[in-house]
Image (cartoon, rainbow, N blue to C red; front, side):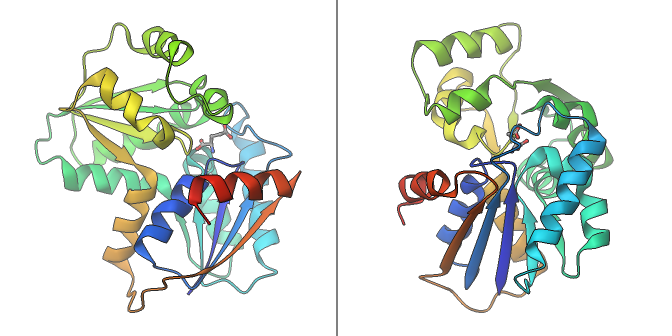
Length: 247
Ligand code: DGL
């Protein structure tokens, strides 16, 4: 199995990390659109155009599947990408909704979704969760977390102030959906802030659960081939990948 993983930038490496941990693919081709990140502040038509361009890029590789690691793209452009691709295109939003539905048996659980402006304005998570009969869903755009993660600020005073800024009036939810590629890198701090009773839903783990439930993976690839591409400064992306993924 050969998979393409697409993100607006470096954040999708959190999804690659989960794929590597579960040894699902023989070859992983990562494309980060680092020249045009962030997507989360862009409008729907721009995000759709970028998504289709990513599909065109991946046509060079004869892939078995494309995983859209970017929540903003999954929320706005999945259908258009599926229409222009010749292989299945899977997004993290549907996977995250299903992972939440599997994890939370009580339909009255309080669920908080956090993500970029694009993801939150799309209401993709809210609609998906409501279709699974969840009644207590709140969604909040928390875009400041993105540059903090890019600066590798995972804890400390700036992050604490940002957590306060966004969440001071919010009661700890039963589940917190990390609806942005970057947020899994803040999971310790988010867990500390909300307390251990809040279940965190991580896009990477959700995608793995989704794939394992829907596709037949019969091989475990201990050392998959990894290729990293970026629309700007691919070397910087490769260095971060080495550090975050230990490869
Ligand atoms: N990858 C984006 C997402 O998951 C976050 C960064 C961006 O705004 O491009 O929504």
